[in-house]
Length: 209
Length: 428
Image 1 (tube, rainbow over the protein chains, first blue to last red):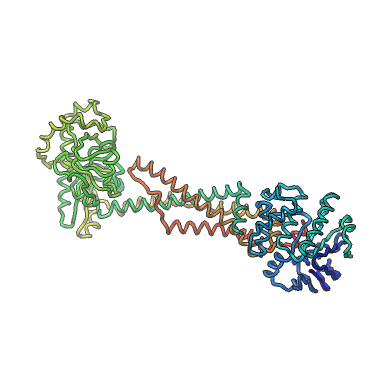
Image 2: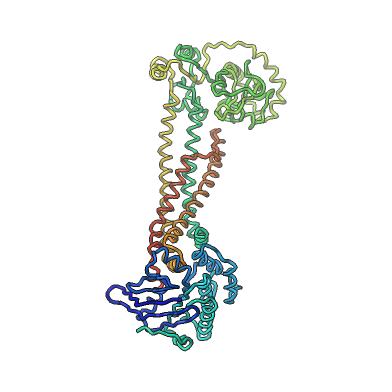
């Protein structure tokens, strides 16, 4: 589960944000919406431990990630937080399977090949495991990045505009997939989006203003 | 895993990788060849000159005298009067004096008239047969025996001078009475006889001038000595002839001193009092190396220049890909990689190139030396061993290569280390 308390962040003097408290328990889904420049991505990066808040607490599984040392935070992030980004990035020189394996190795020091294969199979990618990521379609790449985010069974699954580059059919597919997988793996799912299709799909919403 | 990732990344850009490796290979290969050549060259030169303090010979270039009489690579400076040389050879300062008389060759291998002292000097033992004793008896060096397939009991005719195509001395056959052990020195490529044989050969050579234009047997081969058997037999009476030393000439004398004063004073004293000169192999070879050194140094600078360029090429390759790979790096961080692991990744990628470049350079350099050895053997009867390792210098070269790799990786690695993941991903 993930919860925040009074977090603030600012980029220099011009842009400073005070975010509303959020709380999302295991298996639940929360949607964070809001217009451009309202700090959606900033909040997501704060929740993911990519940025540190200026004040306030971010509790992931009761650990305040704002005060962890750099190295511990890297480790914690790898182990407990899964991130699905708007655009999928991969290690271009590694195959789909190796990309997923790498995520498990970085988090735990073990290459869980079998688990990675099962997960990819689960996401209908069993025929593509040995291809390079660049050989897949956008939708398939999106699913690979979901598999990579889930390989370590994170406590929190964060998704940044996961559907913005997808058509309606695929957008709902991905939304369902994330929702189901988060329940299956008992992860708290936080989606940041301005996609109105998702606003209809998920009820638990917070709007940044 | 990071190393595996680095390896995969290396081959994901095969052209960049190949370019960097080729450049490194070129520079490492050149330096390796230079290291091996220089070491083996100096070893060969100094081992052959061991125990020779001065060389007495005809006036002319002292370097030429040393090259011809000690290393058998150049033409002799001329001849000296044996009786005059003998006066100096008998000097109490002199410990040993080995006279040399060049005359003929057999298939390009020099036939040298000398004493058995020459064999002793190079520690060459007679492995089959016996040492030369009578006129026209010869012993052959191990390399000569191997190359020309000669053995004790064989007979052959020499060709005049040091050119293989020289006139053939048909009136006297040389008779092989012994084969020498392998020494790795010049003696392996020589055919040795006593000095009288050389004189006798050229005495009759002068008498028989008219016959010399007979082309039969000009390019005679191994079978050549068989059919001339009785001819050679008929010449046996020459063995008994005592040749007067009066007016006879030799080519050079290798001197070793008992009293080191001689080494210092004779090079000045001899040209003042005689028509001869005395040259020191140590000094002349030093001069030769200094001359060589300029060329070797230039090549060395060239090789280091190429290494610098390869370092720059690695740097550019890493730096350029950093831009497109910053998302990869951010992603690795998101997945739990530490800053240090990214730094390590970039450095390892550079080091992979360097190690590969070094290994292939070492191999290519040795293959090149193999070819050099082949051609130098044909021309100078000098071989080089490409399988020798000069650990000290090659180890230094390895460290230098690694250093170049680390240096090339510093800036890209620090950039990867300092990468702001949030900014990178937000601007995507």
